[in-house]
Image (tube, rainbow, N blue to C red; front, side, top):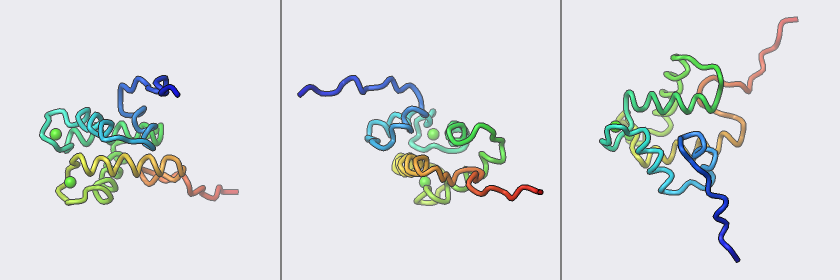
Length: 123
Ligand SMILES: [Ca+2]
Ligand SMILES: [Ca+2]
């Protein structure tokens, strides 16, 4: 019985780590967190949060603009900012990643614009 070490991927950035979010470990979360918490103050906030959301949006949809990011931020803070301080700590980030992993599998992603409501095309 050999350990499957060949499954170890070279995770260099956020997107790949989200794909593997089904088996998120504390290390994964720590890694993603430190990636975005650039000043190391234990919160992802303001510019850092913006960068995080941008990467998140890129996973969700190809076209997005500042409004989408802003909308995404409102949703994320509403859903995942558990202590309502307007910034994301590590526990909250783990919530984000776990719920994101869940919804991205369900093809119904509540972040940004909804794509699940086909508008009736005009005859
Ligand atoms: Ca920070
Ligand atoms: Ca918070």
